[in-house]
Length: 458
Ligand code: UD1
Ligand code: MG
Image (tube, rainbow, N blue to C red):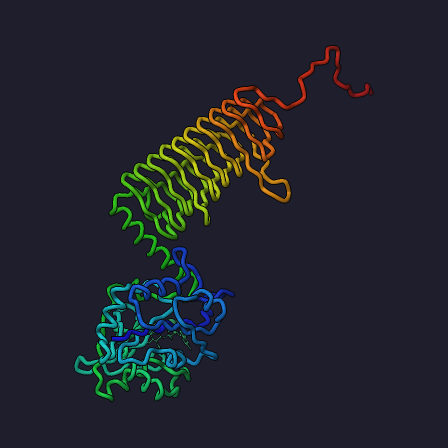
């Protein structure tokens, strides 16, 4: 049977007080709408239709190839929104599932159960029972059977007592849905075309109406304000933290852990407080991450230790840290940093687009950009690669067992042969031969009899 999914995403989100369309605000690193799109993809529907309106261009760019977009201009209510989607629906007999772009955590299993409850012949409503139902459409029943949804603003005092509410998500037989949508009127408290009015129409048509209860409250929570967004973020983070701890990851404090992407891991991984993981991060067996590290798109090897306040950003190229490496505190690894086993990168050392072979060390205040660094190299404090001539980037090649003293400038392109030693304070603009000491700085002189200037006597 054919499955259509309609995602309503035209609303303004006034209470966000933001120039960014509401459904593009990020939750756990992904736009709200992307959460819904990713969940919908798991259902493999014949058609996914996104109703856009406010900020349509930006929202449509986010949808991309994941669905077709239809514009709702102006926004005259949820029924009007779904009306816009009608021409884009797959006409074959089947089910149309209606979701909200600002209800990001709806589980695929719940959406699937809702579509199954419809089965192309019943109207299935996703409902939840709330302590405080204010603002929601109430499920009105008679002798147990659902009769209608009455919006809060249209409800009678006795209907206000009902705590079973409509979550905003439903599944309807596609053919009947089209018929009902065409018959909607806007003679209500808000002057809107309410999607929820189709419930009474289904009852009148003798189409069974079934209420499917949500698995939990979190999956039906919508985002309307920065406070609600932050609240949902904490719930997602708590949930992710619990799943990781269940898999054996030792989090110092699940309340001070943020994952905005995917974290895969081996055994006996430890993460201290205040860390942020973004994109795709892998922590191999026994890896340890100190407090307040930010790690994005990176693979951290077995037994590696990332000391506190380290920033690792692989961006699109990725960063690799070898087994047993020691990184930080206060280190910065940028895209294309590929560090071998047992590499040491110390405080205030920046590495970009560089490969460091096993056992290489840069322990203090240094920069390695566009460099290939051999095994066991010791790269002194304050030394840098001058990799950029103002127009082009050039490579620095440092052989095995090279010792670069402190405060050297390696002007690329330049090669330091195996076992070379570079005297501290050198500016190296020509290749340095293997096994020799290369020094490039003014010779030290001492002037006997020299006297410091003195202040004139008063
Ligand atoms: C809706 C339901 C209400 C339910 C509640 C759950 C209706 C009439 N009411 O009310 O029963 O309890 O959700 O949160 O459906 N949208 C459009 N175009 C529009 C209007 C809305 O795309 O013209 C989108 C919004 O962006 C939002 C969703 O539809 O994603 C729901 O709209 P909203 O205005 O929040 O409906 P509620 O009044 O909350
Ligand atoms: Mg709402």
